[in-house]
Image (cartoon, rainbow, N blue to C red; front, side):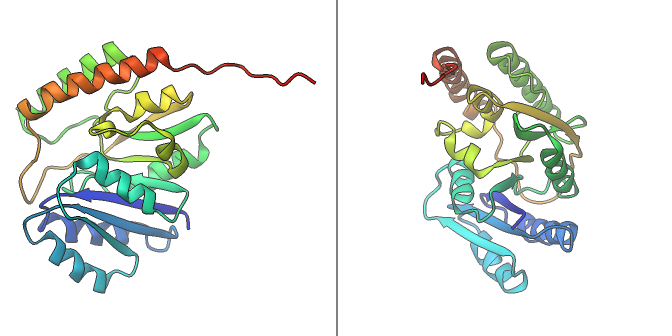
Length: 238
C-alpha cells in the first residue's frame, strides 16, 4: 500500500461524506491507498454518516473514540492503525484541498532522506479575519521561540512516515508542533504551498481563548525538549 490518509473529525456530519468522496476521486487509479477517518466522540450524526459511507467506499475505514480526546489523539489513533508506512493527514472540515495530497506525497518521495515531514503552507487563507490574525500571531510567536523555520505549522495537510510519528513525544495538541518535534529527532521539514478553501458546512471548532494558554504551555514544553535532547556522534571502538 502506498499511502494511508488519516482524517480526524468531530461533528462533521455534512462535510465528511463530501470529503471522503473527493479524496477517492482524486486518488483512485493513482495510488494504492486507504482512508482512515477517526471520529473523536462526535455527538451529531457523523458516525451514522460514516457507516453509510463504508458501504459505498471500500477503501474507507472508520475508528471511533467513545469520548472526545482531542485532535492530536485522534490523529495518533489513525496513524497507529495505518497499514501503509507512509501517512498523510488532512482536516475533516473540507478546507484542505485533497488535490494537494498527491503533490505532498510526490514531494516526500523525491525529498532527501533527512526530510521526515512534508507540510502544507496555506499562503492564501480562506478564514475569518479573526482566525487569520490569530494564526499569524501564533505562527510568529512560535517561530521566534522554537525557530522551526516553518511558515504554517497549523496546516492539516502533512505527509510523514508512520515510524517517524510514533517516534515523537506524544502529548495533547502535539499536532501543532510537528515540525519542531521532527527537528528534535534530527530530521528536516519541507513546506509546500497548498490551496485553502472556505468552510462550506458545519462550524469551526477554533477558539482564541480555548487555545491561547494551552498553546503557550505546550510551546514552552517543546522548547524544553529542544534544549535537553542530544544527538551524540557515536562510534564503536574495535
